[in-house]
Image (cartoon, rainbow over all chains, first blue to last red; front, side, top):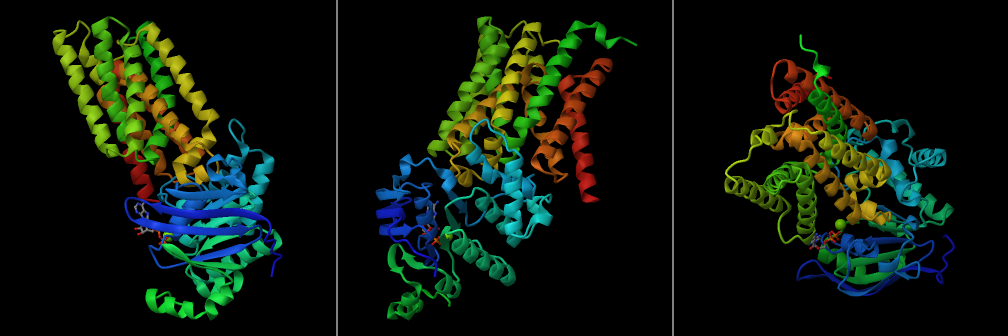
Length: 249
Length: 266
Ligand SMILES: Nc1ncnc2c1ncn2[C@@H]1O[C@H](COP(=O)(O)OP(=O)(O)O)[C@@H](O)[C@H]1O
Ligand SMILES: [Mg+2]
């Protein structure tokens, strides 16, 4: 178990409710995430996992409640280089003209700021990130030519190259073969333990999350559970949920 | 054989044509990849209304075209963000609305001395010395803006949400792309003509995309196609007495077909 410093809260949701149109998709959600946490978020399809993640990132504005990130209201937050994001479906078309190296370099752009251009250091960081996800040999390939699993690894490298303190991942292993998935989880565990990187991770693989995550959240419009993953598995509550919503385990 | 460079209007045509050949594919790359190429067509029709207003008021029509195009582009972007009107419908309203306005002004003025045909299909004769200066100045603004904001432009084009999470001001970048498009389209009016501008913006880019290279390399390929077509097109149109806009676009289409065939045979 990594050292959990539960005093150092870096993300806090207070009483969040959100609706796209009229129906409330997220209702009265409160939670705290601490430095070094590995948070797994599970729940049925359409339960609001992606929506909650986008609220945490400031991409969606809740109608009710407060989001605090690094002790700052998200609306005033400026330190974006502390955050990495790997979206659910990386929406881009296969003919987009960008090499793997160019895509990963984008992770440095926000950090560089206006009117500064990538230099040798940025180049080196890109190569290191590609090494971490074992994609170095593909660096000159067109992103559209890669398999889904390889593309996901490139997007993870892009999140890593920012050198963030916290990474948000939205079902990054969906559509990825089993072997790549395993490597990927090993990589996340390493990043969490060695770099003390805080992870917030939406996934369906309850088995793996239960072993790796330090906190588990179950979202189905409301946050029905948030706490120790092993307690969640033990609880009768879990069996009830499986019966109701059919998550597989 | 006539010596082409003895005619000052030809020199002006080359100067204006080459500047436009350089900026059009750069802007085109961002528009094509964002599935927004229709905006070039819309802004060209808006520019025609601008030309008509300029002719009516006796102001340089290139200046009024640029103003009309920039104002409309900002309005179109606001409509798109508000989501009150579908993006494409907003474009259709501006396209037909400005064409209607242009026709009204033209019929009100009982036609103009200047051949309107030149503005529809482009002509080298239309390019005045003052136009060359305007094209050069605004063309430089487009080029320098793209170079300065290159990182932000490519990131927002590739993946807008991740760009926002990286702290890139995506709203500002979006409005910039659209205003630079407005400049580019309006500047192309005298030489390429209203009806053919979107071809200039789109075809070299789509041809370059067939080669499946990186972003920077693709821009250079598109540049090569664009500059080649414009220079050769102006030569051919001069010696064969053809419309320059039409000749340039036909050359671009030939290159596009070749790149398409090349890709399929790879
Ligand atoms: N952009 C959107 N506009 C309207 N409704 C949406 C949008 N995105 C998601 N929803 C709806 O919100 C609910 C939660 O979706 P989502 O957060 O994607 O769930 P999950 O990620 O848990 O599958 C679903 O009912 C979905 O249909
Ligand atoms: Mg989702």
